[in-house]
Length: 369
Ligand code: UD1
Ligand code: UDP
Image 1 (cartoon, rainbow, N blue to C red):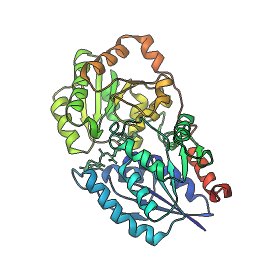
Image 2 (image 1 turned 120 degrees about the horizontal axis):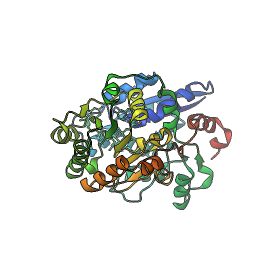
Image 3 (image 1 turned 30 degrees about the vertical axis):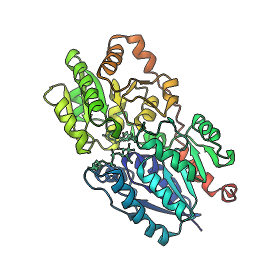
């Protein structure tokens, strides 16, 4: 029996890998093994709980203020023992985190084939996002099978010289997850608090934005909220203490801004569905929001998700206070501009990506590549 091991370690990977775990576990012809690195802890565990996925191995590497050195060293040494014990036929990693890169590297050292889910996203600037662009390109060098979410991602891989037979366009598994979480009768006290206003949902956490860019992002949000009496904002603060300290300085003390703890994925998806617009530097939210028809101001200088920009739902606004402020004002003042962005589009898949990936993995054609 073929053993497939999935490795992930952060919240977004878990949200996009749990649907694949659930699908693979339905297939009796496959032995499915789940290894989490624990690069995140609370944020990872809440997703596992929501999707009822129990890992077989937990490297438990997270520590406060961890550096890229800490993450890399600790995963590399921890995963070796697991790979030696499980001896998987194939290891699946996801996206662009350090967990994905280091796990793929360990597999390369042990000559175990890697399947890359969410393959082919690119900005071609290894410092933006940092270190994710490097991570995904490095995984791309190692991966034997590439599960690309979109045709654009497939084209990137082809241009880099990847063999066409190793690339499969599947859709993004994040959309699979989203289809199970959004509920029309969802209720929450915080949404009741925001119900009389236009609600901005904020997320921010990227390493390259820590410091001045993040300060500017939050200042733009505060300026908007203070200028528009019918606008309220909710920011579920990332657990990174370096993010939280900036958020506390810049956002606290305004009645119409709520700085709250991280939301469980089910809550967050429903908050997105009820918000007026989203301001974020996140990757995954750029994929989820278009299918909910929510305008997203992407507070970054680059995006590896051009499909959402082309569909009109995402706008890249940089990290300068004035740029973010002006873009938000336009969507608050100009109904046509808002409506143009607020139409539901789904460039990232039909919610069946995990099923496609599972089918491919048990397909004999794939075994012979
Ligand atoms: C990581 C990923 C990033 C992804 C993000 C999703 C890397 C290098 N970065 O960034 O690609 O977009 O996850 O959120 O792989 N912390 C906790 N509890 C948690 C999670 C984090 O306390 O459950 C705190 C810890 O102090 C930790 C810090 O946050 O040291 C940073 O976590 P880390 O995984 O290093 O980076 P992220 O910014 O979360
Ligand atoms: N998310 C969540 N709770 C929150 C904020 C975000 O569950 O309070 C979800 C969000 O819906 C998306 C994922 O977390 O699926 C995005 O994670 P993040 O922005 O941390 O990472 P990225 O996608 O940028 O790697």
